[in-house]
Length: 383
Image 1 (tube, one colour):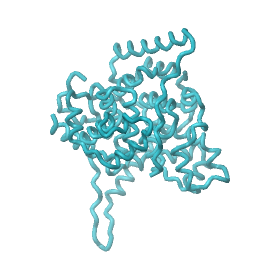
Image 2 (image 1 turned 180 degrees about the horizontal axis):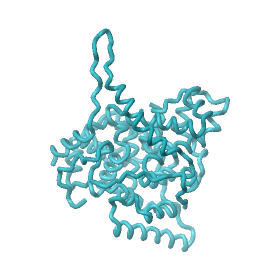
Image 3 (image 1 turned 90 degrees about the horizontal axis):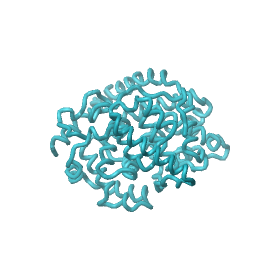
Image 4 (image 1 turned 135 degrees about the vertical axis):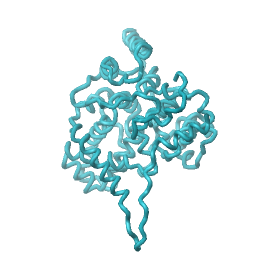
C-alpha cells in the first residue's frame, strides 16, 4: 500500500453534524428529529472485484484487514474519524477491502447520522423519471442492467435525492456518483452515503448557478500553471480547454468516467478522507499522464478535452496503489490556493450581482440559491 507524504495535506474541515451543507455550518434539517442513524457521454466500466488471493497467507492478510476495519468502525465514532491517525494510517498504508468498502465510505462520511427511516420510498415516489436520465443510464451502464432498470435502485436513488434537494439539477455525473456508491452498498445505505458525499463535497456543482465550478475551475487552472506552465499554456490557451468543463467532467463525477475502476475506488477511499485537495492532485497526475499525447504535434487541439475526459487506461500506472502514491507526492501550493479561494468567490459573486444594461433595461441579477432552504422544505413535507 502507500504512505501519506508531506505532499498531500488533510483538510481541516470536520464532517461532524447531520446533514451539513457545504456552504453553511448550520444544518439544513437540524430541526428535524434524527433517529438513532459537455464532453461526450462516457461508458461506465463494470466494477471488478478484488483480485483473488493467491496464497493462504494472502487470504489470511485480506481477512485480517477486513476484521480490523470492522473493529475500528465499531469502536471509533464516525464523527471526526477523518482526523484520527489510526484511520489515516489504515487507509493510506493498508487500504480498504472491497468487501467492506461501502461500509467504510458510509463511515468516513458519517452517513448514518443523516439516516431517516422510511423516507426513501416516500421521496422516490415524488421524484420524476426524465427521458434524459434514462438515456444516460443506458449509455453509462450498458453491461449493468440492474443500474439502468427504469424501476431499479439507481433510478430510485436519483428520484429520491432530487425530491429531497430540489435545488440540485440532474446531470449525468450525478448518476455516475450514485451508481458507484450503489455498486458497493445496499439500497438504503447507498442513498444516505450518496446524500453525505453530495453534502460534504460536491453538491454545489449541481445547483442552477454552479458558481463552485467557476471557482474550482479558476483554482485548478492556477494549480496547473504553478505545476507546469508550458502545459497550462498549451491546454488552456492553444487547445482552448475550458477549466470549468474539465472540472465538471472530473470533479463532479469524482473521476468515475475517467480512471479505471480499481483506480476510481482507491481514489474515492482517500478523497473521502482528505477532501477536495485530493481532487486537484488527482487531476494534476492525470494531466501529467496525458502530457505526452497533448504535446504531440499530431494532436488536434479541439480533441484535447474529449481525450482528457475519456483517456485510455494504459496511460496510468496499472497498480492503483502506485497511482495513488504518485498523487500523494504531488506538491501543490495548498495555502496559496486557500487564500485565493475567497477572493475568487467574492469576485464571481460580485459579477453576478452587478446589473447589466441591455437596451437601457436593467436586468436583475440571478438569484444565488441557499442550498439549505429547499431540502428542509422537502423533508418536512414528506415526514
